[in-house]
Length: 85
Image (tube, rainbow, N blue to C red; front, side, top):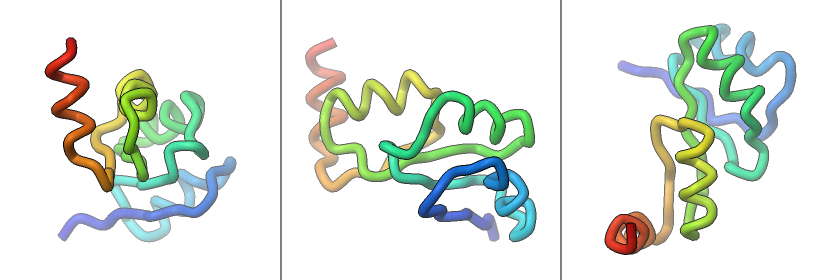
């Protein structure tokens, strides 16, 4: 079974917290993510996903950060963005 660390905060200890529970994926609120955090996780072999991604702008940010996934309340957002590309 794959373990995910759903974190309410980032910080220098995020990778250590993920490793402590043997998580290979961390999930954070999109507004709390930055490229440095994503890169720190990647270097440690930990994937990153975000919540909640409900607007085209939020989806664009998630893609720009190179996230492996996103949680949304509005699944039509992704289809709408892809249809307009």
